[in-house]
Image 1 (spheres, rainbow, N blue to C red):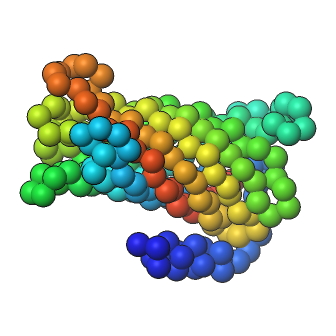
Image 2 (cartoon, one colour):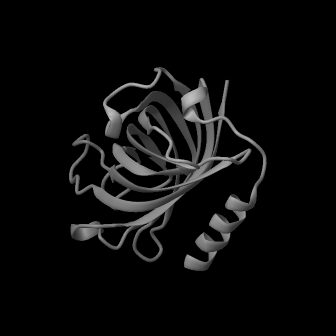
Length: 190
């Protein structure tokens, strides 16, 4: 897994051509993948791997004091593929949507710029996640990371927290708390 991530990051950083940045653009398109493991309780050994597509709108000009200065972005994530690796023979496939992604693009520092975001959505799976609960779950989360500029498609890397839970719609409701690595290619546009 580490070799795949290293090869992906290296190939992403080789891409050439000038690119808009959040400070000069109106929107963003991103293709991303994230994966990680559960962190607590009975679901600590559960793995989650997701693939997503993002479309976002930069809604503000630069705002805030110097260390926090940045632009606000609203985005939607379509998540066409999620694999939840539960116990042996209980792995499941899902699809989802995050209709609420609130992202803060901090000002650039040379060829890179940090970001942070919070998001919320739904995950629909072929089997119950976690086992014995529900096929429909809510997926609130948060992420922080770095985008690298100066490319046609800009690479990004981040750390993402995602909670998977049916919000008490069925019992039991143990939920899954995951910490994930998120890799992506994004393009800002006018």
